[in-house]
Length: 414
Image 1 (cartoon, rainbow, N blue to C red):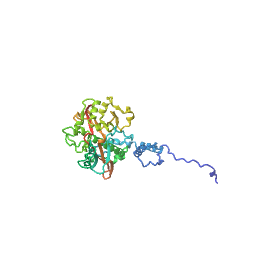
Image 2 (cartoon, rainbow, N blue to C red):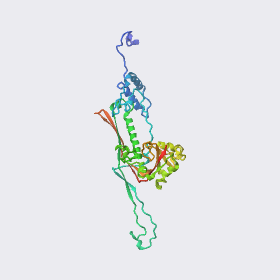
Image 3 (tube, rainbow, N blue to C red):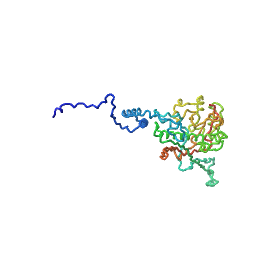
C-alpha cells in the first residue's frame, strides 16, 4: 500500500472558461423524448388526458415539454393564409386552420345540440333483403248471432251451417331502404399538425350529422319532386339529392296525404285544440296515451309552458322515467322537442315566412323503421393525394301501418 492509498483523491473540476474566452463545449443530458417535437408531445398529452384513468404526466415528461416549447416557441406560430379549397387543411380558414395551434388548449368547444328523439320512438327491424316485406294483421273474422244447432241439415260446412263462414285477412308493408351519406376530405398535414385528434373528432361529428339527418327525414320526408313538397316554397322545386327526398315522413301524412287529420290553431296552443288533434286519430289509437307521443318545435314548447295542464318533467313524479329528450306530459302523453321540427307557414308547410309552430301527434306502434345498413363511418388515407377521405352512410326504410297514425296541430302562434 502506498501513501497515496491512504488519502482521498483530490476532487476534479471541469475547466472553467476565463473571462472573454469562448466556451468550447457543453454537456447535455439525454431524454427519451429527444426525438419528439413540442407538438408531438402536446398531441400525446391530449390523447393521455382523454383517458378516464389519467392522473397527470410524469415530471420528466412535463420538464421535457416545457423545454421544447421554450426552444421552439417562435416556430410554433404558424402563418395563416386565406387559401380556399375543397379539402379541410391547415391553411383553409374555418376548415382546419383554426385547429392548428399558435399554442392553446387541446379541448374543443363543442356546439350545443338537442337530443335525437325521433328514431327511438319506433320499433326497428333488420332487413334481410331490399325491399323487405313486413307482414301485418289484416281484417278480423266476422262474428254472428246464430241459432242452436238442432237439425241434421245443419251438419255441413256449406250454406246450411248455422254459423256462417268467414276469413281472417292478411297484409304486408314493404320496406324499401334508402341511403343517406356524407363525405369529407382533409389533408394529411391537418392530421399531423392539429392540436386536437382530428380523426376521432371528425368521425364523431359525422356520426352525429347522420343521426340528425335520420330524425330529419323521419319527420320531414317528402318524395314529391314538385313545388308541392312540404319542405320547399313554390315555385322552387327540391333537388334530387335533398335528404328529405329519401322517403315520406310523418308530417306529410296529416299535411298532404290525409288533410282531415290536420287542425288549425291560429293562436297560442290550448288544451281543447290539442285534444281535438289527438282525437283526429281513430279511437283505437287516441285512447292509448302510452302509445302516443307529441313532437313539437322549440317555439311551441315555449308556448306550452304557459298551458296549465302541461306537466313538466320536474313535476311528473313517477312518470319522470322518460324517453331521452322528453320535456313533459299532456294528458299522460309524452311531449318531445326536436331540433328537426321546423317552424312553418300557416298550413304547416314551408312558406315565405316560417314563423308558426306545429305539434305532431303520432301513434308510435303504427310506424316501423327498417335497417339494411346501420351507420357506417370509414376514414381512408389516399397516399397518392396525401389526404384523407371520410365517408358516413346509412341505409334505412320507414313505413306506416295505415293512413291514420298521425295528426297535426298547425298555425300555432309562437
